[in-house]
Image (cartoon, rainbow, N blue to C red; front, side, top):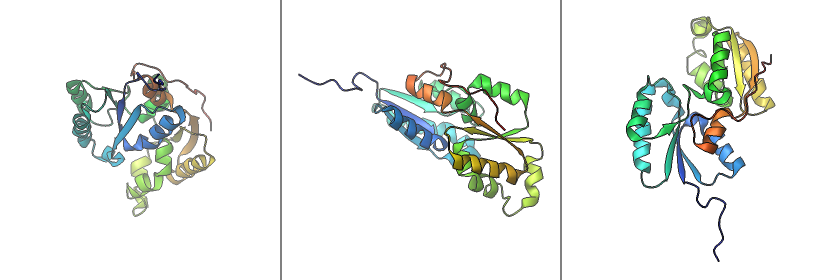
Length: 217
């Protein structure tokens, strides 16, 4: 008699994702035992050249055809100006709902309300805290030209750390980042939010499993 495995009958699914979400995706797959999910990522640095994202995703879709039962995309619009959604419509592939990863983690409605309440917020995720100096300080040339700081951040009032994990080291890093930018610091734990629910259910219309609505200073 054959033994039925835990994943028997579950669609083998490929997640095409931004490299900035790679650690969170791998962690969720491991923590939940989602062995039917595989992930392939495009470079996180493509956020600086978002015109590459739509055709990069298309190439990943075409390469995966026939090897998986289902393909899902873990990208927001991410500055593509709607071009990514055009590609996905042509290819018949669904993506997670929302314009960017901040909305994935907080939930679209919550993020919109938060942004409307204070439009002068600069947001960091776990990934951005880990790579803050490389992506922000060095990436914007502030290590070489600190006089540019007001040009980049003069219109911001707060740095908001949207935390996926409860990591004291990352919290300290986010506070240090706020100090470097001369911004007030706010901490908001989000968990994995809509990223986790989309990976679990493959449904862009699902709301996040957990929302934490309190602001923490």
